Amino acid sequence: MEAYWATADTRDWDAFAATLADDVVYELPQTRERIHGKERYLRFNQEYPGDWHVRIERIVADAEGRQAAARTEVTVGPEQLHAIHFFTFDEQGLIDGVTDFWPESYEPPAGREHLVERY
Image 1 (cartoon, rainbow, N blue to C red):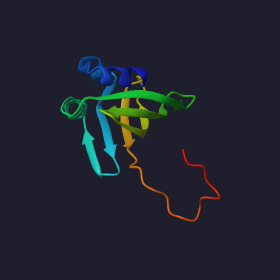
Image 2: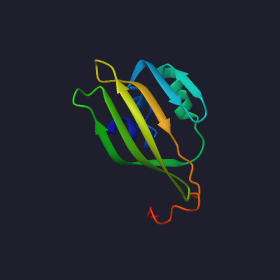
Image 3: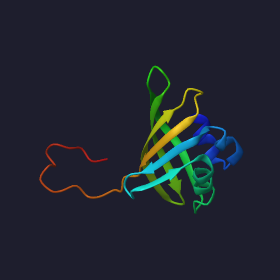
């Protein structure tokens, strides 16, 4: 996963592709989009607009190395976004599944100020 993020951030698309299984599936539940296959997913990333950069905040993985999750901070110009990503890996250690959650910020409803700390 570290190579995946590092190569995406530097736009080293050959090295990025080398982290992916041929049959990788990419899902964006918030937009209900799905991409099947390395070539389509690679092109999706190559064509993604803007000058974005990613920093890994945390990676958690299972003991078998078949599933992992990451929290990242993505910077697009002055905007900073936090995202959660879930990965699955095939038997060769290549990424065969990615699910991204890109939460949008919002103001919490009134009435729970006594329970929460804002940051």
